[in-house]
Structure formats: C-alpha cells, structure tokens
Length: 108
Image 1 (cartoon, rainbow, N blue to C red):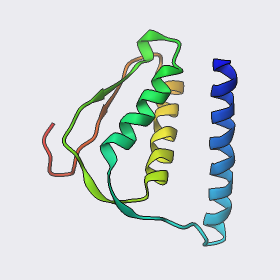
Image 2: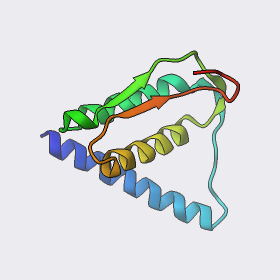
Image 3: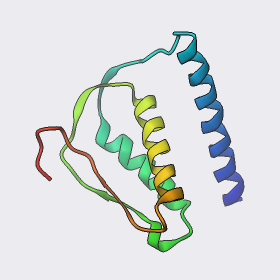
Image 4: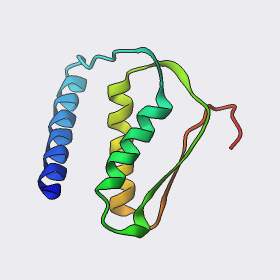
C-alpha cells in the first residue's frame, strides 16, 4: 500500500511537471501569489517525504525557523521543494538532509 501511494504521488508530480513544461514553452505558466508563510509549506513537504524514506541515514531534518511571510505561489513552492528534496534523497548517498529556511538577511 505504501509503495502504491508513493508511486502514485510520484506519477502525479511527473504529470504536473510535464504540463508545466508545456505551459512554460507556450508562455502560459501562471503564478498565483497570495500572502502566506512558506515555512510550514516546506516543513509539510519534508514530513511527507520523510515518511517514505526507508533508509534511516537519509532522513530529512527540518531545522525550525522564524516565519517567512510574503506573497508566494504555495503550489509552486511545494513543487520546487519536492523536486529538490527528491533529488537530495536520490543522489545524497544516503546522508542526512538538513533543511534551513531563512530570509536573506536572517542568521542561522
């Protein structure tokens, strides 16, 4: 069941990316910005992907941070985060993945 859910999510992401690529080529990609905090968006993606990782060494470690509120397309933020973390899991040589989300002028 877990594998089916994971594969289904992956297929959905790939389909969405193909549609986006077509929209970009046609100059029709739309961005829907609205005020939101991107920290919980990224944390949620990390938690979802973390639950599907079978290797304990590859776990995603989300380091809590202050809220980062701005006008963002939450769907695109989730999509980019998913792509980055999926690549980190795939090519990270089974090492932990640390996530720090901060504004440009924020110190770690």
